[in-house]
Length: 355
Image (cartoon, rainbow, N blue to C red; front, side):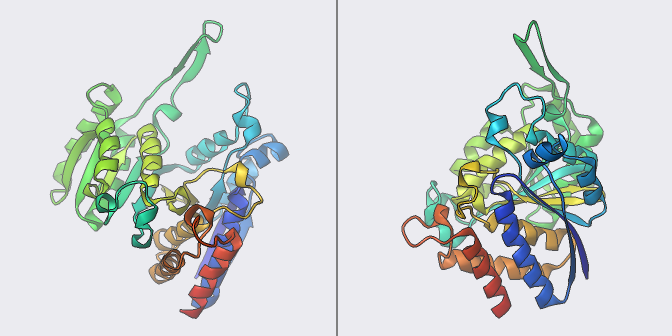
């Protein structure tokens, strides 16, 4: 198969972890006789520096012409520390999602049994956790009307959703629930927010089309508590942009490291795959960043976009082996010898070659 992939390493540790995913991809291509065509584009702070645009037209064209996108990270302290900055790296990510129509963000939260002791939560509470968040990605408060008035003393952000946007994301949730344990939870704040009431009534109206799915409805604050108390009670959760952003970062802690969590952003014609961690500028160039989330994002790409399940599973087995043997970066290996970003990538590549 010919795999045409746009590579957007981005800022901070993005290039380092993405480089390890490319090494793994090339290994998979050699082993399973695939041809890969990689094209690199600028996004984030580096794109602002070069084009004065965090998501330039050149990068957008590259993404449109590719089958899938492998993305690193966005963010730079020089913008974080300047609240008056008119152009920010994160605007590139929002612009990319909107222009490519990447409306569904898929974030799995799984527990690696070999790392149960790394979680800040008791083992008996998290064992067996396997959650899929389906987060709406191109609507809500991140894309609503915003501004300042009264000499900058009053600020506002508007949350808006259409029924069509909710139907589109809920359909994805129902479809994934069908493939899993047939349980779906709609997360909202319908006791307070009008947009949440629209979410709830829209999902309720769709239940008849999926009679085999057991649907529950929970307020976001209750879900935030139960994710810590008993995360294995959830399977597929659907929610709005803001709530999904917060809950998925909370859930990433369950596994013991945000450096383990991959994600996919799915649209009608394209899909982007990225680790959920940020650019982690403090670690840039130190070879201590965990590449596993990026490598697992590549695994998701091979399965979801290219339907290469054997190749995806080969990567997953190699990752599990590296975790079991504690061949990991410092975030997961404080007591024993820690390995560098590239050493972990090399270990995973070698395991795939030999198995």
